[in-house]
Length: 234
Image (cartoon, rainbow, N blue to C red):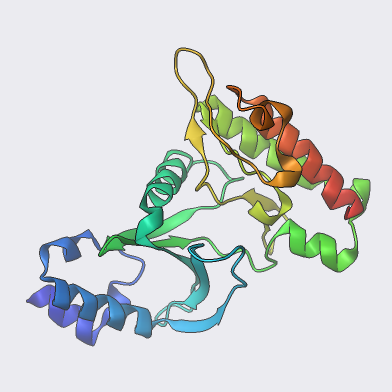
């Protein structure tokens, strides 16, 4: 009862806090609580949604009490597995300064709500298109930081599997962070390999096209193509 009272009257006290206690509440009360919490945040604007439904909806949100800006990804039930994968990777890589940080998350009626660090300058794809390519000199720092993010993943036997400019986010500090781990996977501990279609059309390496097993080089291949795209906007 106390939890419900706080949710309805002071939702900002719980926003960006662990919300797993909702699982113990009746369904209609949980729906009421989350609706009130989401309404308590200023939904300033939606980001453009990349892809078509059932792609996640991504919103820029602001916490009323502190003014803190964050990103909320709403992942539908039919993509529940990808949400679990992303949460697993973000939790495992929380100590990396080159990977987007997980703020909080919860699941309600099999819909996943993931709260992430906000990158005000959006992605390197946006910057590349705006500047019509950023040149090799300016790209050096970005390339180094992306490589450090990839190294951090690979040390934990994680393949990103969708490295591209759209998934590298530019912070107000001028540094970049790698994000969107919904396609990620761990390599097999015995073979150090994985299998399955991955990457976008332009960054997909030959072994994936050939339906072969692959390993860490798939991320390096996608990284190289992404850097070329960032430099030249081609």
